[in-house]
Each structure stands twice: as C-alpha cells, then as structure tokens.
Image (tube, rainbow over all chains, first blue to last red):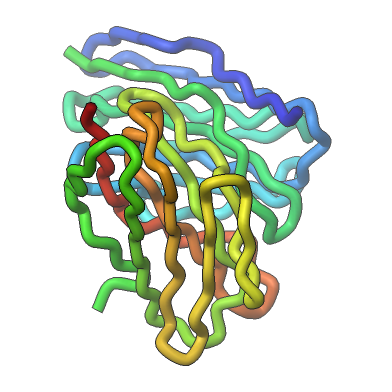
Length: 111
Length: 111
C-alpha cells in the first residue's frame, strides 16, 4: 500500500512564526502536491513538484514556499504565518496521471 | 463555468437504498477520471477509477459519458458506513498530472 505521512496532525502557531510542514511518501512517486482544504472551498492546490528540486506554483502559492531535496520528501513552508492560513493542509503523491494518494493532513491553527 | 461540478447535497438515504451521484466536467479532452471518498476531518481516499466501458467494485459502479461530459457513481444497498463526501477528480488532456477536484457530494445514510 502507498503510504504518505505528514509530520504533524495538529499544529498551533502564532502569527509571524515560520512554519514547516513535512510530507514523506514511500512509493517512489515522481509527483508530489500540497493542498489546503477549507469548508465550502474544496481542495486548492498550493504547489506541486514533478521531480527533485523542481517545483511549480499551483492556484494559491502566495505566502507559501516549498522544498524538495529528496524524491520522497516534500516540505511546505509558511514564511510568516498569518491567521488566514489557518486550514487543513494535505499532501499527496502520484505516479504520472494516475490517482493521487493523500497523507492524513495537518490541521494548522494560526493565532 | 466551473471545470468540475458536483451537486453538494446532502443526499439523505435510508440503509439499503440505491443512490447515484453525477459529476460534470467542462474540458472535453479530459483523459482520466476518479472517484474519491472523504470522511469527516480525514483525507480523501481513492475509491475507484472510471473507465470508458464502466467499471464495478462490489456495490459501487462508476461510469463515464464522454458525449455528455459527466461521470457517475452508483452505490447499491447503501450502508451506514457509506456516509461520507464523494469527490470526483478529472485529469485534463496532454498528459498533465494536475487533477481538478470537484467540491464533493455529501451522502448521509440513515437507519
């Protein structure tokens, strides 16, 4: 079975803090994704990566950056957390245009 | 027009009922289609792929209608445990591995 893990299930941070969310997959997938999910808005793509050190902006990249130094690991960075970044963050991986596999999510609260 | 549209529901059905959801997509060249299931406060999980010829997995049947640009999910003999949100996912043409997610249809199965 594909396994995608995320570093934290719940996280509480203060406004202005730098936040790191980590994601690891064990299936040698080339593609990795970061989404946020908010009630009524569905899944929104923040960034994706199709190879090591490669990254592309998604629909809502503002306020976020990413890092992919190893194939299995994709990190999402909030440079200076703000309250409007309170959300559920979901990491996913996939092989080419096949279905994505999601991690359990990180519920981030910024106070 | 949204790229992928779903009726948000909720669909309220008794145990044992048959229920069907549709999902329409706007890009006629879309290539790959999937249904995901998402339980409350959990990550989306791949339920099944959707093939042109239709496919079945136990009580679940997925179908694709390219002419009318929609996919469907039929659930027979509904169980309480089927209560969840069902997301449809569409991959555009050209080998893109960036999917578009619908916002989901909520299903509530009651005793």
